[in-house]
Structure formats: structure tokens, C-alpha cells
Image 1 (cartoon, rainbow over the protein chains, first blue to last red):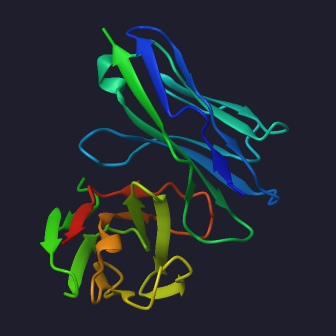
Image 2 (spheres, chains in turn cyan, yellow):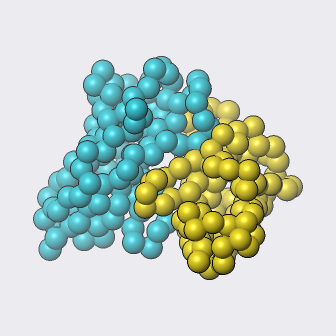
Length: 116
Length: 116
């Protein structure tokens, strides 16, 4: 079973609109971290935002915020006031503290295209 | 400060040849990770180093793949007798330490490997 599910293979959004990228995850470990990365066409993975499973508040970093709904195992990324430079692949990832591999488990990504 | 660097940025090789991919992590980062990104498989974790030791090799796809890390810094991923299915982007990441489990991993630009 997939541990990270991103259900939107591609999205088109008008510039300056807010956009929500969906991510659901599956784990039985009570301790885990959730991460979002951006990968522009240049290929480099850029860290955007992190949410820990015990964090009480949703994480925010500038225009990025994470809508964390623990009971639903959902960690959606919200980008406010989208810009043309936001066009990229976006990956949701998880690391379980208690077990499993030490690396991150990634979703298949969402290709976001911002239109002028 | 300098980020994670990888070399070469691109590598074209013939089937059956050996290749070495190099990763130089962020200075002071003790944890180092290798991932592979391909169209068919998405992003896959390969191996993790803490210092010079590799406690988790669970993601290495076959015994043709090996990795080492010397001096707690630079790491080399070696693929012996390359096959066409090894064609992918190989990404390296590092984090400050692994003990907390929530460490953010910072990625390098990757090495694009093409096996003809």
C-alpha cells in the first residue's frame, strides 16, 4: 500500500490565486515528520515546509502553509498568492521515527502550472 | 553557505561499464542519503549514512550498487555493470544529524545517469 498519496497529477492555477496541493499518508507510527519539497525544471529538490506529528499548530513558511489534519492523515500544502515561479513539481514526503527505512518516503508528486 | 554538491551533473555510459557518483554534503551534516528518481519508480530511497557507517542499506536495488563515505563527509555511489534500467537521476541529501528523526534533508542538484 502506498504510504504517501498525492491524488493530483497536474494542476493549472491562475496567477495570484491560492492553491491547495493534496497529500494523504498512511502510518501506524505515532512519531513522524511530514515534508513538502518543490522541484522546478532544473531538477533540484527544494525544501519548503515541515510538520511534525506532535505539532499542535499548522506549519507556516512565508506563502506556504500546511493544513495538517492528523485524524484524517492529511497534510495538504497551501500556497497563497501564487506566482509564475511557483510552477514546478511538488512532492509530499514522510519519515517515520519509530521504524521503517531511514530515508524519506515520497508521493508521486503534483505538477503545478501557474498561468498568467 | 554552500549546499549539497554532486558530480558529475550528467553521465552517459555504456551498458556493462561501472560508474561512480559523488556527493559532497553540507559542511557539518553527519547524515547523508542517496535517492534515485526515475519516471517509472518515482523517488526511491537507496541508502543512509550516519558518519561513515551505513546502518540502512535497505533501498539498494541490487548487489551491483554500493556506497561508501569517508571522513564523515564525501560519499561515493558506485554502480557496477550498469544496465539500462539504472538510467535515472541520482539525488544526494544531507541533514545535520539523524537522532531527532525530524531532521530536514537538503538535496543536491542530482546526477543524471544515462546508460546506453
